[in-house]
Length: 276
Image 1 (cartoon, rainbow, N blue to C red):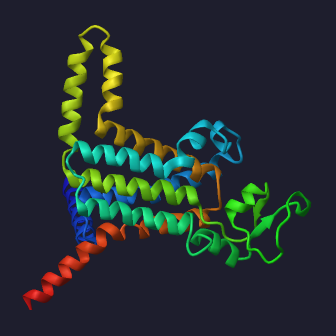
Image 2 (cartoon, helix red, strand yellow; image 1 turned 90 degrees about the vertical axis):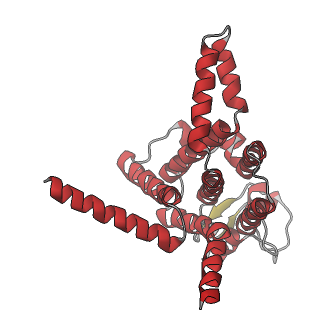
């Protein structure tokens, strides 16, 4: 039995190592890459298991969605920059990666020579905005995007509507994880934080000091935001959008990983060419 178990473990390790090498990522990065598709799948399973049960998070006006997710890219950039500054990681290369990720977020969700890509996909697949024409004066030939539709208090109906929430939460999480793992200080930071909290706990007002320390510790803030984004991704996957629309948002988010993996492929290819 142990022999069979060991053989399967060896096969799994070999498979994981090969996959990581093929994608030009480390094994921790490969684990991160695998987490978010599995989360979307888990949310879909929960959706079918629980049915259409109303909850606090099935209401899009819930506090976390309004305060955090709606401003998700701003929160991501703020916490990530704070982390990078504390870890002396704000290099030209890092800034270019963040700008690249931001550009892709803008193109997909905000603007791409007019409507963003997600709106273009929706309209090209037969979608549109259903609104009461008497409420607002608008030219008949104007193409209405999702932002204008919301301002007109209309309803986005029909078509294939890529999940902007899935895209945002996954893309921002991938960028934060890749920057965090590249520093290589995660375990050291957590150990130092634990030791500092233990020292604070024996002092007067120790619990308050520990809470303040967590709120000012850049690694803990980053991990906290990563956990919040993961949880909201699970809620989004459980309560919103068709499965195909969540997959489209997921694929679009993973395209953003090219800002990390692309240069690694180019570097390896260039090195092979120079050797020949």
